[in-house]
Image 1 (spheres, rainbow, N blue to C red):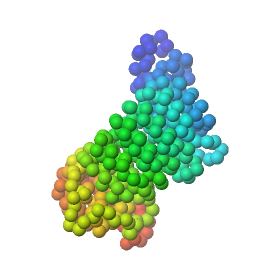
Image 2: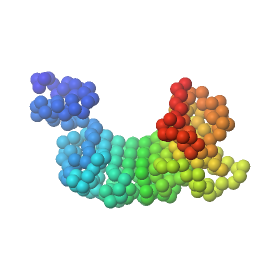
Image 3: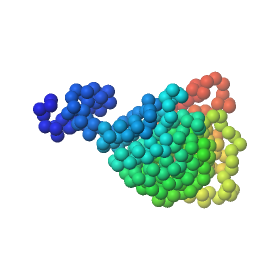
Image 4: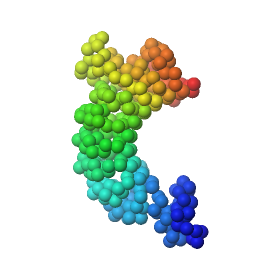
Length: 320
């Protein structure tokens, strides 16, 4: 194979999708090692990334055209050493000018996350960044999120999971007005309520996928919408004409409408998941069935406080 033109070898390598096969191929010869490294656009590393900054530097010098990077610290212990910090993230951003998709997944323990708002600010240099997924990056607040919203103009996917300090709505307002988000996932973020999400405003018109989930038991006594006025739904006067995938879990939608308004706004909805949502009525589902002609999948989980047995037994899944 080494007698084949490098351009042809490059096309062959592009068609190999399994990471294990690519790793094996790179061990065959120095030429294939170099070509495979040049063609590799995505990489996933775990808690063996130690020392983190040096390991990131080495990886980026080997793989020069990385677009998709996932750093996942699941299974981390003290023996794995210090996790990725602000300096390591800065090195990653500087060394990967083509970065479009970044996933950072740490532990839920706050002392195990060394990336804060200043570190997240490094992403301002990623002009091509389209997808950012943050899981348990607990030191980041709404200030860091606002920096990303303002600087990363091409961002279309944002996942926020297990955030403890993210509150405020300025970043939501900016993304709704100026951003281009098509996918928004908010899971177990104590500082972000369903009423905060109403500040996303016109951004709802661009969304294609939305997921909002509160972990733990359903909280019947939730903060009320501070601007709620009986029989006046002005805060919900916008459409979701592109939303195709909707998931709501452990959300209380009464006495105000809350995120329940989505059920009457999504005309092109294809997939719906409602898990332990308090306040959904039969009329809501009837309205949904009349307005969503493209609906293909419905998954419902009943409120566990009214039923006995494991939660998994109260799942209703329909494919239409």
